[in-house]
Image (cartoon, rainbow, N blue to C red; front, top):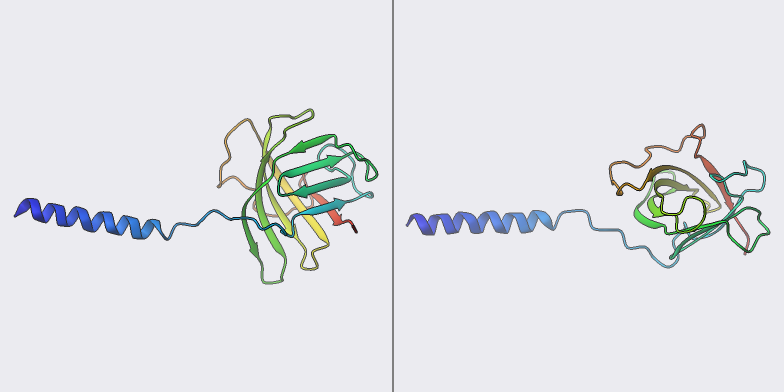
Length: 159
């Protein structure tokens, strides 16, 4: 009798854990036409490694350019979308993470918070460089702060 009761109890616990596991947040699956994807430019902003005048973002990652007119990037990397949501004002937010695959910082990893305007024409982001550490879903920037040294604003290029 005790064995049956223990088996019954273990079965209940197992079924409950399977059911609760189904409530866990699923990994975001990007679409081919994410608002994040496209060519973003800012010829008037700061022009340095953290603030590229031109970035091209697609499903494969990103390419950053020294000048808007350049066709050869100074840096490339992976960029994956961790999560996406739309706020009450219609702006689109992303948490992204990636790894630099070429250039001076090859191998460095980063986590970014990105805001795309409701009009889909302005991209603002800040990022946290995590070096060679592993990605941490609890270590994203928490706000878009124009005073953050990594703050970048870019505008969707007409294609």
